[in-house]
Every structure is written in C-alpha cells, then in structure tokens.
Image (cartoon, rainbow, N blue to C red; front, top):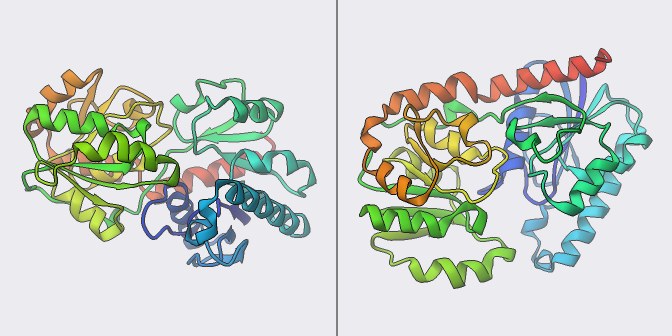
Length: 347
C-alpha cells in the first residue's frame, strides 16, 4: 500500500522528550515500512524516519522561540495544514492517515483518496465537537472505546490501541524504594493528587513531567510549593533513557488522572518495565490496566493511598507480559492495516 501519514508539527518525530501522538505515529510508520508498505510521513523537517519525509516546517513548532505566543502557534498550525493539503492533493496515495485531528477534516473533499482520522484527544471539547458533528461521516479510529462516549454517532471504522516498541524498554524485577509520576504538569494528570497520595502513604515520589506554557501558572501556584526535593522530588522533562530508568526502578506508577484520558502511553510504558499502575477509574484505565493483576484501579484518593501499601501483591512480570501481548507497536501497525484494508474494500 502507498500510505501518507500526517502528524502534528508541535514536536519532531520521534519526540526528543515528551510527545505522545508523535511517538505513536513514529512507532506506526516504522512498522509499516518494515511490513513493506510505501510510506510518506508529513511532519516537521527535524524528524527522523525510515519512511519518505515530506517536511512541513524546517523545525518542530516547540523548538521555535516565537511559538511561545499561542496566537502565533495557532497561525502556524493552520499554515501547516494548508501545506499538508496542497501536497496530498497532488499525490497518488492509496490512503491518507490523519493524526493532525479536526483541522484537516474540512479539506477531505479536496483529497483524491480515502482519509482515516485517528482521534488522539478527548471528544468532549465543545468547539471541537462542532467540527466533528459537521463531519460525523468521516472515517474515525478511536484509541480506546471509552474515548467514543461523548460522540458515539461518529463513523468509527475501528478501534486501535496505541503501541510501544517493547524492546526499547527494560524490565526490572527488583525496584528501588520510590514511586513514579510521569505526565504533563497539568490539572487533568493529577500531580497534586499524586503528591497527596504519596505523602499520606509515607512513600517517596519522583516526578518527571513536561510543563507546557499553558500550565506554567498552575505548576507554580499549585504544584511547586508541594515539592520538597526530599520525599517529593521533581526532575523535570526526561528523555527516553531517563524515563525507562525512572519507571523500571520504581515500585509503581501513581497516576490519579482527573479527566477522561483517551489512552495514556505512560500506563503501558510503566507496566512494560514491570511497574504496576495505581490509577483512577476514568478514561481508558479499565481497558489498559487489569485491576489487582497489573495494578489497582481506584475510585478516590483514599483508596489509592491504601493500594500503595499493597503494591507488592502485584507480580511485575504480569505487567510486562500484559503489555507485550496487547500494546506492542507491531500489533498496533497490524491492526491499522486491517482498518486500511476494510476502508479500501468499501466496508
């Protein structure tokens, strides 16, 4: 198959540090190439891929100093979509895989082949819902079944769970004496709740997180005063090696999410390293974590505090095997190919 994969321009592919969508797209593209497909990746020019790269901008938006101005960043996003459409309209692909999201939907009619759109974000954002409802007959792929709930009327042609390159992670049977927090420093990821859980449970917490420009005030006001660099330690945004070391040596991941997380790569990244997940019963969690087998699914902070003390009940090898069987990048790519074939067959 001749496949075009369009991804956001915020981060390079693969991302240097934090970047969920860009990492998923990278894992997908690399495996599609290994499977023998002819793949073109539309991404920032500093991306690295074994596919053919069509650069939208020379560098990722996040790497440009002027992109701290959010209006400037939005302007560049629309210019980027324009470049994507202009390129795709002139090429002859079998299928276009849209990871950019709602901004590309209104241009589908100008493109010469079928488009499938993977929805990486939540579907409860009002202004985005207006766009999705307008184009509800477009072909959508969810990344969890829970993600579909706000807009079940959309034309879902598949559900494909995100996958990671299992071989790039390390399993550790005997962790050190701390728990991990890995996410963005934003309210929906629950950093304040994670700190509360750790303090009440009397355990050490090491937090690795990206602080986006939109979250700087929240971080300084709500989170930073709680970090003592002793029991609660903040190490900032980390690259892949540091992330693996953090996760594999932790007794578990404390992830008290406060929103309907569409997927959450950090859940499977922790489990593949052997770290059980303690998370709230929200979003994709019940689809990714097996309660009392690969972690604990909790209904409130009190329950999470109690579960921290029971973390040794979980077999770390079960966590690793669960991810290998269900959330590998190879399985993800194979599942996407099945969706492509179904769409091209007109089903």
